[in-house]
Each structure stands twice: as C-alpha cells, then as structure tokens.
Image (tube, rainbow, N blue to C red; front, side, top):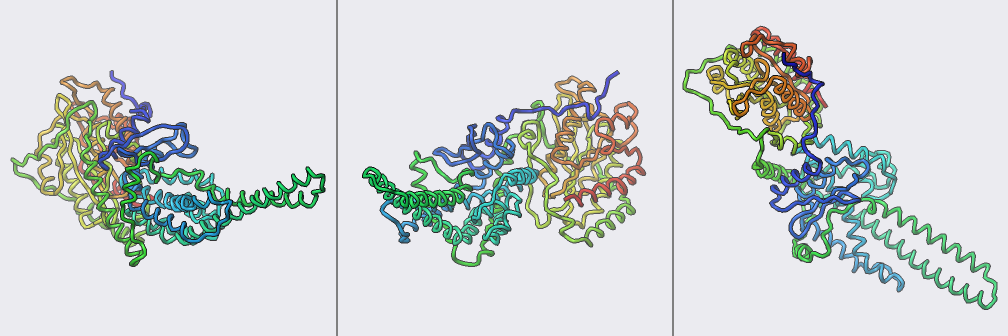
Length: 617
C-alpha cells in the first residue's frame, strides 16, 4: 500500500543557491535595460554603479546587518532598472555643485585645498539627499513588479531604523521618515520636509529631481554652514600653529608661558568641538553608499555626463509635473513588463507546455446559474461598496513573489501587474482538465458561471479561468476560458491526465499577472494527482510530494488558496477526502460531491474567503 505523505511531512527545500538566484535575477534585469548587469560579492556595503559596459551590482559578503540577501539584490537592481544613473540627473547636480566655486565663499590662505573641494563637498551633499529620495522611488516601482517585495523593503527599513541616530540634517530627516523613525523626525528643524519623500513613489526619475530641487535651499544652507565651520576650523588651526610655535620659541628662551598654554588649550578644545560638529554632519554620508558615482578610470562616462542636458526644474507647477512623471512611470512599467515577458520559462522537468485551443466542434450548452447564489454575492458586494475605499482597498500586498527566480526556474513565473484605477481582488479558477473530470465539468461550469454572473458588475474584481491537463509524455496543456460563451464548451472537451503540481503552478502564474492587490486561487480537481512522464506512470507517493511542494511554493506567493474536490470517483477509486486533506490541510480543502455542496461552498466558504481576502491589510 502506497503511503501518501502529510502536508507537514514534505520540505520545500532549496531550489538554487543564493548566488545563482542573484545572477538569474540580474540577467532578467539586463534584458529589460538591454545592457550587461554583473553581480560581484565584496566585504563592505551593498551598492550599484555604472560601468563602461553596463552596470555592476556589489553585494556585501558577509551581509550587512539588518539587510537580507534577497532585499539587498532587489534594491540595487532596482537602481539599475529604474535609471538612477541617468546622465541628466548627474549633470543637474554637477551644475549645482560648480556654482559654489563662484559664490565668493570666505576663505583663508590656509584652506586653499579645502576651497578647491567645496564643489566636491556640495556634490556629495546633493547626492546624499538624492540617494535617500531615489531609494524611496525605486523601491516603490520595484514593488509594482515584484509585489511581495514591498513587505520585504518595509521590514528592512524598520530594522535599519533601529540603528539610526539623530542628525539634524535634511537628508537625515528624509532617511528617518523612510526608516519609520518618527521620533527622530520630530526632533529636527527640517521635520516639515519629511512628507516630501512620498511624493516620488510610482514616478520617473525627474520626480526625484523635482523634490530634490524643493529641498535644495535647505541643503545649500547646510553646505554653507558646514563650509564656514571648516573655514573657522582652519583659522583655529592657523592660530594654534602660530601660538604653538611661539610657545616653543619662548620656552627655548626660558620665558614663562602659562597664559599662552591656557590659550593653546582653549584653541585645541575649540578645534575639537568644531571637528565633532563637522563629523556629526558627515555621519549620514559616511555610513551610506553612493550609487551615483562612476568609476574614475572611465572617462567615457564623464564625457556623457558633461554632454547631457540638465533638468529644467524651476518652471511650472510642481504637482502637475509630478503627475506627469507618474503617468510616464506607468508606461515604463508596461515597457519593462513587455521586455521581461520574453524571458524564457523553463517548466518543471523540462517538459513542454502549450496553449490548447477550445474545441468548438460540438454545440455548447448553457449552464444553470444559481440565482440565489448570485443574489447572495451581489448583496455582499453592496455591503463592501458602503464601506470606505480606504478600508476596502487599503495599501499593502498580499502576494509575496520574493523568490521570482525560483518560480522561473521551476516552471512558472511572471509577476507583473497591470495598472488600473482600482486594484481590488483577482481570482483565478484553475481547473483539472483530465478525462475523468468530463462527467463533473457541467457542475464546474455552473459554479464558475454563477461566480462570473455574481461579480460581472464589480470593476475591482477580476476572475479568470484556466483548464490544465497532460499527456503520456508529461507535456502540459492549458486552455483559457475568457468569456461565458467559451465556458459553455467546458463539458465537451477531451482531457488527459491530472498533473496537479502543474495546475497549481499555472494558476499562480496566471494570478501573478493580474492587477488585484488581493489574490485568491481556487484549484478544482476530481481527485488524486495522476500523470505520466515519458510514458512511465509516476508513483502515487511521488505525485503527492510534488503536489505538496508546489502548493507550499505557491502559498509563499499567494497565501489565499482553496482546493475544491468535485465528484465521487477518481480513476476508478473512491474519492478519499481525508487523503486530499492530508495533502492540502483541512482549512484549505473542501469536497463538493454534488451541486448542492457546490452551492453551499460558494455561499458559505467561498464568500467568506473573498470577504477575508478583501479585508486583508
């Protein structure tokens, strides 16, 4: 007798090493940016910069405190993907910095070297602020592609925020706001700048420059103040040197130097105080990478920056300009999606997957839609409409696709969303298309049709239906039912075997492409996984393990999955509900042997599931 493993008996396992994961993800980004993206591992910090041939992402090894490897690579690749290294931005900051050389800043003969570097100091200050703002922008855009990473970014921000110390500086305030340290924000005289960081979310790079231009007067104030402190320190150094030499000369001549010694000590203390103030102001920059640098040995990049046209930031309404950049970002997201969608997906075990056309050679039959169930659902939807939009469609993502490359390597994986005015609930009904399902498909058709009818007027609910099966070689087929007219043919289709792992994968893939922030996957099957590879039937204990693994993987990305068993028989064996419950867990599996049980499932469990998903925050 074959022993079927329980859900908790099967380990998901590691499907690829972290470095392989990083390289594959970098490869996908390189396809989108149409340039080389290399990943290197070095001791120190995570950063990214432009190179002669493309881009280089440096990942800290060992990892930086508070930053897990997955979030580190995602963040740095997001800088590459969303053009943080744009030459126009760098040229704009360069021009700002160069102006400091002609502002007549007070200098002394002793600070000639420092004076030559005032441009560099200004450049660093502007870039530091830009870095903080850009981090917020690129993470927000990355979160629109890799949905669950929003949670990862927030978790890391909170962890890094615990390490922050108070620095009264515009960039430090923005960083404290980013890292969820309101207590540090309210202490600063620049606290009113903190909300500006959210205005760049979901927008193009120019939005960062618009916000940077708005805080530039405060940065200029800091630059001038810091520079004057350095000048004052240089003056003290000069006085200290002169007095020290005078004291030494007097001592050689046997003269008393008590008062001079006190003056010298005071000068030393004053210099130390100034050094401490200067160091405090530099603290923020010294602890953070600067992803806007180019390699000094690459003159071609410097030449490109010099030849770039700077942004025009002072004309027009800023809010209107930001709205325009948001519209442009939507086009950018769609463009990236189109490029990435061409990335080859390697199915599990290198099997072949094809789209199977719906056979329309027979006359379709219309389903009997359960009017009572439709009224129940419509009543539920009206209840939601009466609630505030904030409560129903609050921010946050239920879908976690942090292991995007794992999905690609194991058989499914687009994780993009389409921009819509209202991101509500997306549902995919993934149906077993095996031969044994044919006698149950009339019941399934009525179930799906009733659900479609119940929600057809709801713009924020999108429902898709796919049917899957396989042949004796293990090749997979998918049918997509987009309309009710197509669904009417469901019970007349010829089927194959029951590759349930692939059915879960295919449903998750389809769902990941949909726009809803809340996701629900419903897998419908008439029983135990049953399929072949290369003409050889897969043993029952193997099919169950593979099914549980794929289910667990999908649960990491889509925490809302219901498995519905339909009918009494499966391949000649009595339908064993307990076996399926061991595979999927009692809470996520329900048996519907009759149409009455289907109706009950829809009006009770499915309705509650939809309500639960819609209410998730």
